[in-house]
Structures are given as structure tokens and as C-alpha cells.
Length: 309
Image (cartoon, rainbow, N blue to C red; front, side, top):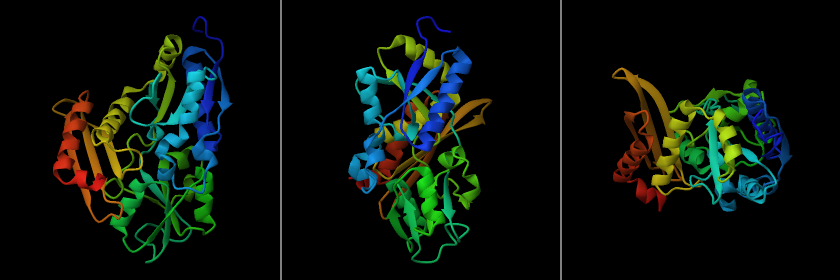
């Protein structure tokens, strides 16, 4: 066990998915270091206010600000998040010590009757929680009605199964982690639905000046996850987009010229899906930030800036 560290306090949201993710990280940390941790449940604005679309609450920061404040106040030692929920710029005094455990980054369809997005009848009601999905759904199916969808993953799945929506589009990772995979009716391929930057990965935050905890948490960091997701988030940052913007990105590893390389695809769309700017670039595995900047310049030259205004 690391000297001076007995039991750490880990901040978590109350949802079933957040608790699963926190338990997964805590168990991994204890297995690797011998240091146990116990959860501190913290309520966030995003969890309490469910009758307002997420962009109107200030974006994904609605799920992170209270946990970050608990870190600053010293009430917790680290916090576990879905990486896609974190703003691209670290808040003052907070750092991401580890990025790990990327599940399937695809989005999926859950429908009570239709087998796929294409099978839905014209006028069908499709629920989603993000402008990114809304724009891409509208591009694929301009004839369906898209409505905001809030709530925890299990709540959203229930709304589809009970018929409140004809279908919902949701991240595969959360569905898998809660054991709800059997309800998935379609996995959307990346050429149809590009994910949010960082989708499917976990992030662990701690105080930037807490050297002992930061060093401990770094054993969890997985370069195979950090490299592509950092490039995805850099693309988002270079465009000046926030979580409410219809921006998507995916970094993928591939072998080229006898070495590991990085392929980065980015997308910017209008909210109504009528205009989509998409591009792909390839480069050095450890050159993700430069690749992201070049990709942002490419989509900007293709007209993306007007879509973000």
C-alpha cells in the first residue's frame, strides 16, 4: 500500500451507471495499488433538473461541477466521470489523472417495435439527449420527429420500451455496463452516427496539487484510450465548440508503414441535419493534438464555422 494513503474518498453521481463506473475504477485501483476507496454520493444539477434540455442547463458541466467543487473543498480525493461529460478545459485546480476503460463508442437504437432507425415509420418519435445525435438523426431521417430525452440510462431505456418514444438513440457503453444489451435493436455504424469526443471512456479527476493521489491514480491510465480520446477532445477544443454543439469525433488506431498510427475523423453539422461537414486525417500515433488542429482547419475550410455560429 502507498505510504500515507489508507482509504480514499471517491465522488460519484447517484445514478446506477455512475455507481457502476465508480465501483469499476475503485476496484481496479485497489487491485493495482492495494489502496481502497469508498464512495461519496454527490447530487449534480444535471441529475436534479430533468425537465430542461441539457444544453439549456449549460451543457455537460451540469454533471460535473458539484463533483469538482467537492474536490476543491477537500470533501473527496478523486472523482469518476464519463469522459464525454467533461469540459475540454480543466477547471482551476483540477486535473484528469487517468483516462481508461473505453467501451464500445458507438451509439445504439432501442425501439419497441422497429428493428432499426431505417425501419421507423415517417413521423415516428425519436428521443435523444444531445444536439450531436439530433443533427445526425435528422440527416439520416428528416421525416421523423426528434424530441429531448432526459433521465438516467435505465430510465431512458424504459421510456422506449414503454412506448413513450418509438425509439431512442443512446450511447452503447452505458447500456452495456448496466446489463441492458438485450434491448438494443441496432448498432449505428460510424458512417451514420459519429460519437461524441471521448464517448465510452472513463476519466478520473483529482486536485492538481495532490501529488500523492495523482501519482497513485496514474497507474490506471491507459495510453491506448488516452491518445485517441485526447485527439478527439482537442478537435472539439480547436473548433471552440462546447458540449451543446453538434460536433463529433472518433480516433482510431491502425497499423501503417510498420508502426502504429492514428486516424481521426471529425464532423460538424447544422442542428437540422441539412448540412454536414465531415473529414478524416491520418498521422503519427503520438501526434494527436497536431492532427486534431489540422482536422479542425480542414472542416473549417469546408464550411463548419458557419454551422457553429
